[in-house]
Every structure is written in structure tokens, then in C-alpha cells.
Figure 1 (cartoon, rainbow, N blue to C red):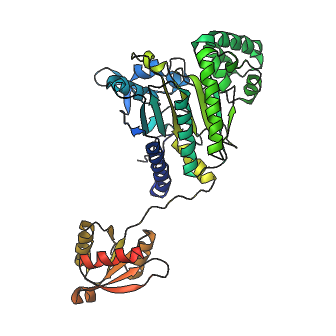
Figure 2: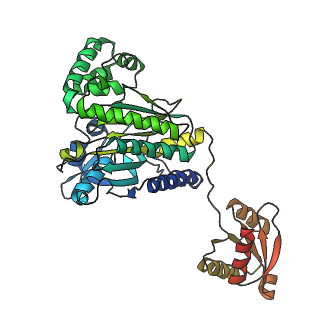
Figure 3: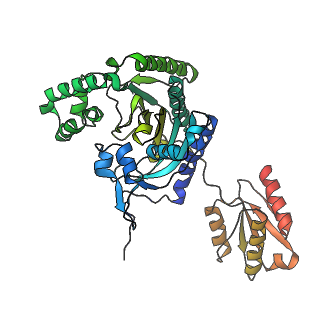
Length: 427
């Protein structure tokens, strides 16, 4: 039998783990800096949660969800995105009783049945943040700043923020009506996929990846021309705050992109994406926006909220593309090399060192040269060489594998060896 991983999934092998550790560690550190606390939700939810929250007309619900009937007859879906689950948890657990806004982050696997390509797989991973319970433009700016700080702390350069406002329900009908009229007037110049989108959801034509559609969309009506009242005040205030961020972060920049709408039904007002200067069709690193209607859609109290999701696979691709260094996986502090009949003594020493919280690996029983090659392959800091002579005399040879490292004779007991390698490592 020849088993292979399912299409659109990946094995994250040990050599790639430093990249994953890096994106997770930086995510946690940045989230903590901004006062966000971790939340974990189930990997699967009631299918209705996503049908209502994400929207029946979206590609996600229509074509991409992994849904199945469980043994109890309930329709269950592997989560295709994180926001709906976090909002369900907010409602179900009464988080509206906490001081608002409630700031939360997650780092988790998501699932969508899509055509696999670079940066897009069927099991993918996201770092997401949600600020629930505050409608102010300051919170919008905070979320955007958090996304920027995450990218900057990863070391990624040449990234631009694209931003737009979809406004509120006031003015939205007029905007969508004029948008439909415009696109129906040029429908014969649209590719079939976008003609189909026009009939279902005209806003999504603006988000098309087809170049001919993008050229037409540049001349389409602009959503910011239809916003007024509180939505207009919110938008103007946010742009002032973003101008201030440009003064604080020298490399931060943004541009208003009238074609930016995002692909989910629950967005209103602010929408944004971070992408590298040379981004392709799948180049967005972080995407998000305000979703004030979602809590009401899910049956909760009307509650303002904003968040983003960062695609970890795409961030790692960008780290590699920009050849950015990440910390290599640390090897063991000690590899125990045994010779002659010292195998049992070596195994006992390795166990004793581990019990003393010294990371230790016992080399496979081979020639001395092969065991030393093995220790180097494990990126070990030291080797302890134990043969019949060392067992008889009670003295072990400890060799540092650092460049220019020496070899010492150390008493053959756990405390002495542990103190020696720790002292040597502190120099």
C-alpha cells in the first residue's frame, strides 16, 4: 500500500519547524503587547454557524466547506475561518459581561476545499485577533497597528496596507445599485466567473483576480463616495490615526483602494489587507475589517467588532522569499557516546541527566566516528564519551562541539557533568 497525505495538506517536517516556531512566537508576543488574550475554539462547529455568519452566497459556503453529518445526524463543518467561532464563543459564554472591548487572539488550523497552489492549501493555519465591543476608530487603528507590528517584528519588509470603507447600511443600497448598473453595462467584457458573481454578489466582482475585471473595476463607483454621517466621521478619523502611525513607524504606509471589499458577508465600514510590494494573486499576508453586524446575525446582541487573520503559510513563504533568518532548532545539550561495553552505563547516565533537566540524547551504538557524526547532525552542544576506561575510573570525557571548543575530563556523575556543560555554555 502506498499512502500519501491528502491533496492540499502538508507535512511540517522538523527542518521547517523553526519557521513555524518563529511565526507563532512573534504572534504571541505581539498579541500580548497589545493586551490580547488567547482563545481556542473547537475545530468543528454547527454548519449553520458558518452559513449564517459567513454568508450563503460566499464561495466558502457554496463550494469550499468540509461539511458532514455526524453519527447523531447533526451537520458539522470543519471551521473555514475563525471569526464566526470566536463570536459564537463570545455570545455563548457571556463575554459581553466583561469590560469592553474584549481583546482575543487565536492561532489555529482552518479548512477549505480549494485548488491547492502556492500559499493556498486545504488545511491552512491562521493567526487571528478580534476586538469585540468597541466601535471607535481608535480600535480600528489599534488592530491595524497590531497587524503591522506583527509583520515588522517578523522582519518582513516592503509591505503596504490597502484600506477601504464599505460604510453602513445607509448608502449601501444606492452604492450597490449603481455598482450593478455599471458592471451590467460592461458585462460583455467580464470573464464568465465574474458575470456569475455579478448575478449573485456584485461587490465580489471588485475582488476579482482577473486583470480585465480589475481594469474595469478601477472605473467603478467608489464606496467611500456613498458614506455619510457616523460612517463618514469614523472613516475620516481613522485616516488621521493612520497618518499618525506613519510618523511613528517609518516604514508604515497605506493607500486607499476602492476595489478592496473582502469576501465575507459580515464586513462593514473598515476593510484592509497587508500585502508585499510584489504580491501575486495569493500574496495577501493579513486581511480583516470591521464586522459590526455579525453578532446580531448569530443571534446575539448588536455588538461592534473588528479583527484580522494572518495566513501563516503565506508569511513563511515571504520569510523564505526575503531570505530572513530564523533561529534554528536547538539541539540537545549533550549526546552520550558509548564505546565497548559501556552501553548500559551510557543509558543510565542519559536518564540521570534528563532527570536533572539536561537535554540529553543517547547516540546509536555504532563506531566512534559514526556516533560523533550523529552528534553533529543533532546540533548537539557537547558529547560525553563513555567507554570501558571511563566506567572503570569514574571519569568521563566531555567535548564541546562549539567552534574552538575543548575536551575535559569530568567526574562521572550527573551533577558534575551538568555543572560543567552549563558553566561552559555560559562563557
